[in-house]
Length: 127
Picture (cartoon, rainbow, N blue to C red):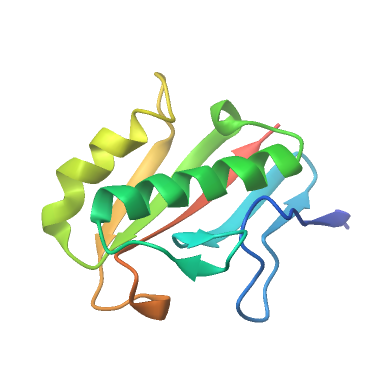
């Protein structure tokens, strides 16, 4: 049986439900969906999509680093958008954080996200 380690950092928002920020099993870390909460205030501080996406990727980065890795170690992202017209903008924001070769990715349009946010991202990291 693979041992699992719970990842916790104050540099990303604490969980708003019964889940961990991330779980590491073996050399793989599963990063829970991050929404654009500021970890210091636990509030969504903007309605601007680009600013929300930027905060989400800062949160993903913080969790990855707390797990002993970096954004370069992320192999898969799932991006959830409440408006698929933001697809191009999420790409623009993403390339500020990730370099080629980019991780595998899915981008899915959904009707609603927690706290009324516009974007959520989860990831898988291998170190």
